[in-house]
Image (tube, rainbow, N blue to C red; front, side):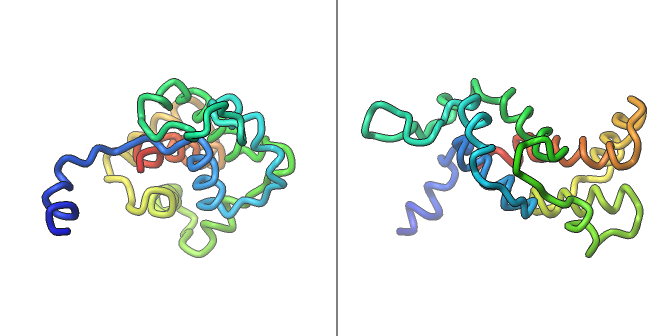
Length: 159
């Protein structure tokens, strides 16, 4: 057991979440409500439609099988954050109400802690905020764009 748990850890390679795991984890983290039907199209675009694999061994559990679905993952993250998926809603502001001080920097830290388990380092956080602001986004749009970027980030997609 020691070899498996301790010595084998150095050889463990992270893997992309399968699309279904990615979608479900994003919905859970945002406390989103959905009828489930709205997830049909995003999952189809990512290549993992329900019960659609013709072989009985299930969908692959290797990263290389899912690397081609990164753009649909980005699109899903942005549609989810903007509440653009049919019959799927979340309230980003209510998630932040507990920790929000009204400061965009604090809200981004709270989002990163919620979605990634830890806040971003100060330089990364400030760079993201400055980049989105320089493109002309409002504070609410900035928070949405950063939240979607965190969901679509490698840190959220690796398991």
